[in-house]
Image (cartoon, rainbow, N blue to C red; front, side):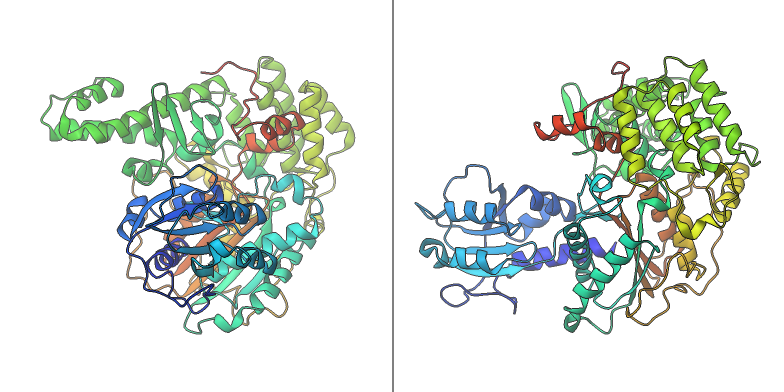
Length: 625
């Protein structure tokens, strides 16, 4: 994705030529030749950004000897230059000054601020004689967001749903707009078309974004491709945040977070072994978006292929776990065998959880979720809201041992997918599901965000009484999926896919998603002249092929206020292959999962997290598998 590549180029350029920018502010004597080697000192936020942009090997190649956290004790290196890449706040500036209070930590100092450095902090740094004489560069770069490898970006605002809805504070609007402007700046997109959901929050973000970018227009490159920024909020599809997704990556973050997998760090705990899921794992890149059943088949084929290459005997009747032990005995394939063993371990845990949560099988929770989320049954027939309600009550009654988290998640999904639910029905469902007082407070807190309310622009399209709130386009798509999908529990798709397709084919509703007045003239509703392409089966083993030679004619940045889900990351990835001439970027205020949503609105969990190092709080009522 161009965004990550652009940010990496900026980072490398800053490190290679710390004194070569016109915007640099010299403090002390004139610019000197760039150092051949330096130490990079960062805060925790910047460390996460740097890790999401490039590898340590990339930095070593440009002269970085090591990366150190500002908050940790470090040995003085008076003969080595230091580059401080920091969030420009008072706490970090005070720590920087402490490095030179008694003895110089470095020979020369290059300060790189990921954001705007206030004048008061510049004065604070200038007042330090010990530091000021050593500072050779002071530069600002717009690195205020995290990258999801090449798949998207987010702002790390985990509390998004709780603090932004129903009404965000003005400071929140300013912060989001400023960071979104930084994303545009990294792409050199200073004059984009901005279209947005017709809500007050989205409108205010769009206007503030336009204002911030207008102040920077002089830096725009007229040769850049036209950019459209498409802003929506989480109310366009709350169902996507709650329904189970059975692709591999989404299942890991949903089902295993807090067990053997830490969703915050991507670290897998296998007892004595700890592994990190990332780009260094070629297998991960190939299977992360596959359905878990396809991952099982992929692993079987991968192990068999290695055995064939090593001329081992045919072991088609032997379990994959036993085959892996055979592969691990061949030194030349040991590294690959370790990676396959990791994914075999994770996949087994996923299937254990799928079974424990009663997601699969006849009458399983997964099928009920799909019915509720789609309003369409497995045969492609419409399901009335009352029938979904009856099925929900029956399932819960027949499964009294259903975990509390599953019950809460199920009723949240129902409220997210149905419109015109009366107070009596809400009360009845909460009683039947036997929600604890804690879970009931979480549900009420989520309802108070009004994210599950039907927007005024859609109310006239719905019948009176309790009905499914899906759009006609969604309904048609779900019916098609019920006929064509390889896996039954894959009828549901996030609405963001439908909206991006409409945008890219010039069919997006002007009433629901107007173009901001005064934003760049262009054709934001006809980004692609070709008709919407046919959408193939998402679970096939044949990957989409995108030619590197296809010229990019348009750029679209899709941004979701309230956060994005792994299912949305996946479908936008699919659309990139279907629209190779369009550079698609998906971003949000955070990456969210069902458990994170429940933790977000749980006062007890919030209190625990506030007194911990940020580890996830497990709230399931069943034992760890």
